[in-house]
Structure formats: structure tokens, C-alpha cells
Length: 245
Image (cartoon, rainbow, N blue to C red; front, side, top):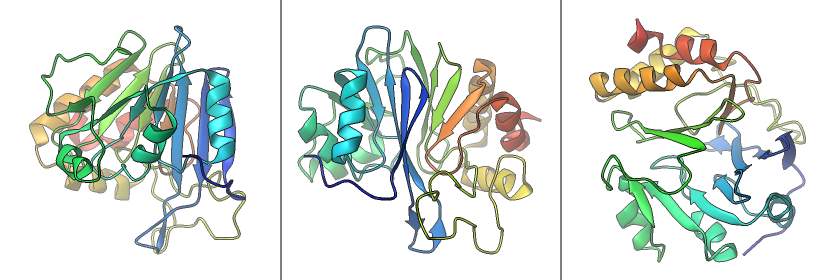
């Protein structure tokens, strides 16, 4: 279940009902993307978790302080390493992923209780009164964007980056600077080209980018990079300008 604490893990109470768990993570062992899980306590007292970092003892203690975990979420087709660990710790929680993960994780002994892309589009998993969801079927990694209505917070995995991730590397001796580019943020041309290139169905991407824009997020919590604390709508509009123009 829970593993030993990590000296470079940063646990932060973003709001009284939102806690993040940030740590260094190097993609391909080279690119300092950083990693982050996010836990949200709903008005019912139940907790929703985007599980993208290890469930350490201090992570579990912080989540348990919020309340009982009812949903364990996979951000997309590549954020799945710790789902099984979370499920073992919270056996009564529902594991929700994306269609591309169903067969893969079944082979590892993990059964999903729901999957975006596999279930009917109108399927509800029980948190939608407080957290909206938009499945980006046209995105390469099959990401889901979520929006916590009460705090106007958007939560994403690979749909948006804000690098370097200074918070995620704040307890590490490693340099968070991205090689060559130096940064990868919503306002730069590199990010615009990245999300355009990752869009395999441009019409679907345009539709879903507009849906998120319509939510008018203020804060954005992403898996990779520093949290955008305010004016998230402007950041999203900039990153997805090729689809929204």
C-alpha cells in the first residue's frame, strides 16, 4: 500500500479542499517535467484523487485528512503507474480511466469501474455535480480535463504544461530548467505547436478546447509544471489559440 516518504515531495494545501502532491520527474530520464497528484474534497465529504505520484505515507495521511477516497482517476493513457497502489490502499474507491488503459491494466490485475471513451458519452460517475469532465478523444494521449466548479480550478495531465516546474523541484538538487527550450508554458509558441501536433482529430480538439474555455477556469493544476494560480482562462486561450482562432 503506502510506501516510504520521499524527501523531495512537496505537499501543499492549495485551498481548504484541494491538496497537491508534487515531486521531480524526468521524462525519458532527461526532461524535467515534474509530477503531481491532486486530491479534492467534495461537499459530500468524499474525496476525488487524480493519482499521478506514489502514495507515500505522508501523502496518504494528507489525503485521509481530507476524507474518504471515493474516486481514483487516471489523467490519460500514460498516467497510470500508481493506480493499483491507490486502489490497494482504498479498495472501496472507484477507479476511473480512459479506454486505452482498460486492457493494459486488466492484464496487471486492475479492473476499472469506468472509462472515458469506452463508456457512453453521457455516463456519470457520481462527482459531476461538482466536477465537470471533458474527454479529449482527439488528443494523442486521450486526456481528460476536469473542472472543480466551486474553486474554478481546472485539473489536467498532459493537456497543458507550465515548465519549468519550480515547485516540483523545490526540494531537489536537480535543475528544473527544460533543455534547449528553457521553458514550456501556455504563452510560448512551443506549447502552441505541441498541442496542435498532439491533436489527431482537429475538429474534436476544437470542440473540446472550446468546452474548457467556456468553463472559464481561474486556477489550473497540471501534472507537469507550476500551478497557474489565477487568470487560467487566458492561459488556456493562449495555449489552444490554434484551435480557438
